[in-house]
Length: 552
Image 1: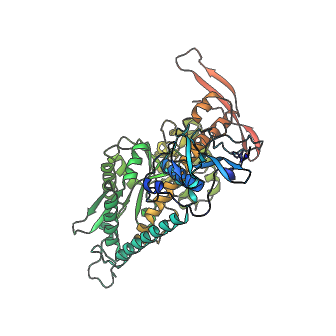
Image 2: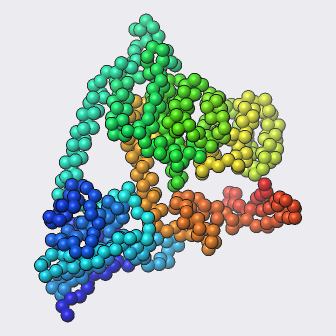
Image 3: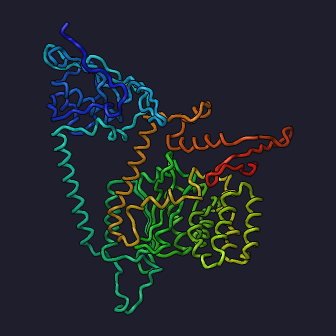
């Protein structure tokens, strides 16, 4: 026998998960006919296909895998004693299983024993022929995730050259488009020196646009309409025909709302803090707990009329289906507009925003630190409504602040922001306690107080692509890795097959919290309603203590 196998499937290292070919690949006539080079959808592999070289087989299967949405691994390569390859097997990157690790925090399992593969061998004609094919996978695959696999990051010289040409052409188009924006002088420009103008401009009745902003908006929306037939926007003009308010949403945003419409946060931070771009964003939370954009608007002023117009425009965009719950900052104007347009939605106030206003409204009081501590304890540690109201009464009486207008307004709105009142409202993980982690970060890296509107429009697509990529990576992680469960409970195993990995991690923290609960008892076990009383042991400042009784 002059044949020997010198290469077998890697056992465990992630670095050896997927094979990468170096150098340019000589494509055969068959591959050219399938349309791979031109970027069309490649044909699936079938028994009998022939290729000029081993590299051509890999390139073909890798292109097919990228189009389908899975990675490629070299499972086996057989060599003769002369070190000449004569047979090979390419598999899905999820083939096989890793060796069990003894680490305290083992990495998630990314393999599923997937059977998808092709086998091929060198024939007497000196060509490589496919001799066995398995197309079925035992896990989900998605074309949108194909580009993230290691095997698809290595391309031939010819492919690189084509990509460079395409990129160069696209950059040229972008430069031309930006030149049009920068050089244009829109009719909506109102960048006027008020000292030299006989008539003072009423900025509360129109957007404060600088030179070229109006034309930039028009160009941007025109381009999006050409690229996206389902792009939606509404323009509000004042009596003089000047731009006053604006709303827009692309097709992906509108589809996202159909999936993630339970809870929406309305972020008016830019408008409230007088940013150069008076942006108001509608933000939801997706199946990974990530923020997802559901629409954007530009408003001339913080008036009930402006907010009402924006909400009605958004309601039209989402086909008249309002969310179940809405989170906003503590703003009376917003509350009035929301109660008018969304009367049935549960309106919650952002607790983190309230805490940020604490120094501004109470910082001058003599017992400020003590008041803040009492406030935090009442809000965060109350498990029942009676506990909160008793703690609040004790706070205002002890510190003599019963007549403080801001605190009284907060107490009047307590059912909108105190966690103990919100237990029956489904918030999809977007807790009003700390929504800033989900909401404010959406445009955080792309929009600052002095960012011009033209620059923001240039960065807007970049912000969307960044979040789309994070969602695609999270999808890939959930499909291709098995999260290590914390307990052997069957319900935990069931939910691991339904939840994404990010949501499962949040659920796991609740499972771990169960271990600190003890002394469960029942009240009225024979009655129509059974009340369970549970005690929980927690740590405060490193010291163990028994928490108050937890009951409905």
